[in-house]
Length: 178
Image (cartoon, rainbow, N blue to C red):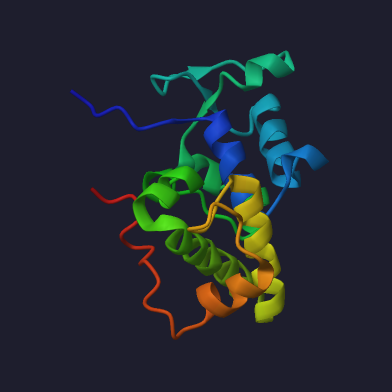
């Protein structure tokens, strides 16, 4: 019997884009999400059911949330390549799972690695003060609190999370492995 490929929900994809594109969903949709939704509507990307079988295009926006996707097909779309995104949900943890597995500091350090990688891919340098502000925003958005029950300040993040003298960052290779 042929193995059924693993598909992931539309919501998983949108969460990935928002997280890796440093996008606040309250500001509206991300351009990559719009492009992939258009590809599904125009049938340039196969919309699937939970069993990975192809289904017809969505007709109402509410049907889009019931779509399932194959990461390899999504990654082949021009919008993903243009934005230098690669969706690999097998090795993805949610911010809450990262917090539980690595603690508040480790969760912020994993996000630091993702932010640095996205800047490096574009050839841009990222000052630590700007990185600390982004990490503070990430912590605030995802409810990541330090030991005293508060979101750590930008200065605290810059001095105690980003600094290379405070221990080894959790390896992103270990994320998602059981």
